[in-house]
View 1: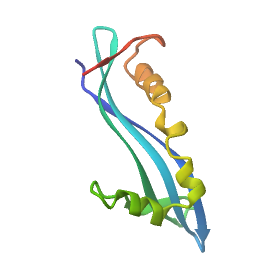
View 2: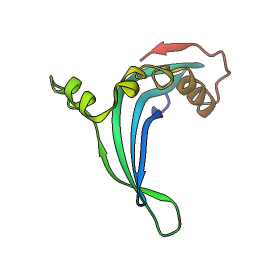
View 3: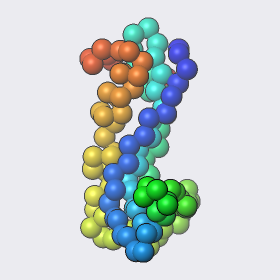
View 4: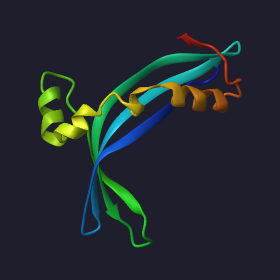
Amino acid sequence: MRTAKWFCRAEALDLRENEGRVRAGADTLCMEYGERDGALVACGGAHFPQVVRLERDTDGGYRVVAQEEPPDDAGYAAWEENHFSFVSESRFDDDAGTPAALENAARAHFGLPAGAPVEDC
């Protein structure tokens, strides 16, 4: 198998800006893919919410100043509830949760045709 590579997709659910600072709540999906014998190989992944805080740079762009993810334990649901609105929580598992776009990006990266099968690692 060729070297595996991570592909991620994040869908912004909550965006708030205040004095050049942005708080972005996102639904994030990351998958690790490789290529073996003309097939795309899915080796692992994670689907999780996160909160990213950004500050405006002097050139007008933004830089990440903080990033938060929920704990892996029983506090996960409480963290999600405290960091996202009810409407945003209801959108988890929508578009960012579908790996089709990531599979397509991985196929293109590895030079595979659009219909190349996906196999387990």
